[in-house]
Length: 242
Image (cartoon, rainbow, N blue to C red; front, side, top):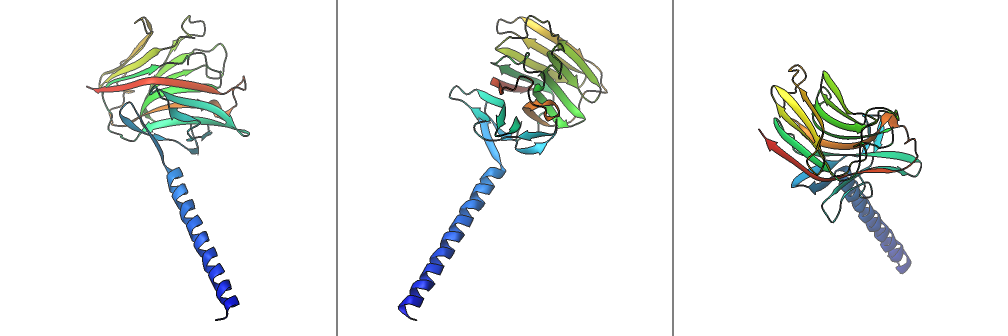
């Protein structure tokens, strides 16, 4: 083999090695992007990406959209990236939750978000077995600010549009789930109860195991009416089995 042919051969091998290395790095990056997780309140959470319901939304799992800060607070956002609005969701990787007391502490005000935004904290087995806390105006400025639901049948609005608590921060949202009832409560940091509702419709109450999730999403993937990004900041979550 001549010196020129040998150099050509080595250059081709080098290019092949570079291409294979790049392909390997790309495969590793794709595997990492396929599943994003974080740890918060002693639990592992899966961070959603892709597209889908509710609302036919785009879901962003990037660290700029969902993160745990230095004070161990979890941030979920609605953000416009490029020309697209993105929602966020985290789900427990464990799906063995059942009867018991579920408690969230939310640092940010969520009962006066833009009308097209829904902030949700809930238990979910599937779309017909859920227990939901949803802070939203359901698209209307003068709508209720906080709603509870026990699916598949029972719904109850809780905080009205003229409530003096709609800008409250550091609110504790909770439900106590039993085979015969689901009792919802929202309290201010000083212990004042601002919302209380008890569902005793046994045909609505789930009797299956499932997971826990939190979301910030857009109704029908409509942009916020005010055109601004939004955020829900959660400082704690706990689950005490019955």
